[in-house]
Image (cartoon, rainbow, N blue to C red; front, side):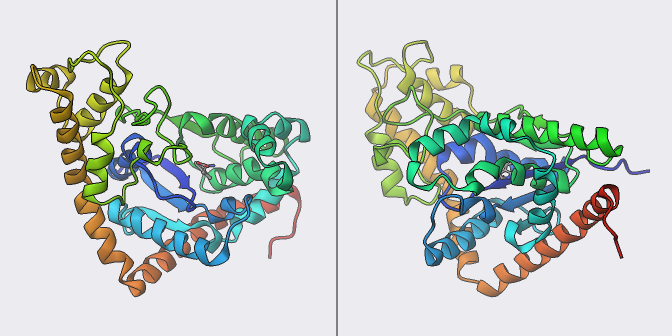
Amino acid sequence: MEKTKKRIFSGIQPTNTPHLGNYLGALVNWIKLQDEYECTYSIVDLHSITVRQDPQKLKKQINESYALLLAMGVDPDKSTAFVQSHNCQHAELSWVLSCYTQFGELSRMTQFKDKSAKHPENVNAGLFTYPVLMAADILAYQADLVPVGIDQKQHLELARNIAQRFNQVHGDTFIVPEPYIAKTGAKVMSLQSPEKKMSKSDENPNGSISVLDDRDTIIRKFKRAVTDSEAVIAYREGKDGINNLMSIYSAVTDKSFEEIEKEFAGKGYGEFKLAVGEVVADHLAPVQNEFAKIIADKKYIDECMRKGAEKAFKTTRKTLQKVYKKVGFIVL
Ligand code: TRP
């Protein structure tokens, strides 16, 4: 008998094109996980409006993020790939779960504290309750595992607490999800400030590589990458810039640090930076070509979105009905 696969859920905001760090650190794993797990991946557009968005721009970004997910290799037949707002049950479950979440718990979320300090002009209730919506995303699918970065660990912990609390009051209802820690996945640092993670909010645009940057831009940014004055290509403490370039090169080529050190022994930084830029550009080219094809095919995108939404709705309906019965609503 076939063993039922464990379930994975993860979401990505549509408001920024993923950068190389998102890609090598997380998204590459999303693709790999599809064979071993039952995966559901969502473009979390509901989440993105906690910050004011331009509607036209947002619509374009949702389409592009979805197309990019497919271009990177998320298989809409094998997995469920959908846009969050296409499944109304996220918002419904979120309401129920918000009644099982304490004001104090949400006040302690560091991301809320950071964001509300940064945007004091728009500290809206959605920004505050956002982690409940994220819990609903995960719990609605009865996900066993959630691949998340360190910045989302506190939110996942909250989702676990909410699930446990609900289960305690009403009996087993939700799977309590665990974080999925990838065995592989590179930590990519800024090319300009290699002591910091690569981030879309880097003040210096040369610090981060978008997965849709063209070849010349990628190579130019790598050529400008900050290194050190030692002129030795080796992975060692104190060589943040070179270490980062080596990690990237290793992630893309599968070569070990020793192999890379050998390959570039006696060679200059200029040559090494160019080599890294070239392998990254080569690596992203097929994704970019596929993206160009998909984004031009609106019919195909719509079809996949619709299929994803239907699959997502079917899965979460079971959970929602169970939850509504447990809390005492009349399920017809
Ligand atoms: N909050 C996550 C982020 O900003 C995105 C997200 C929304 C998510 N719902 C999720 C991630 C559920 C994992 C599981 O990156």
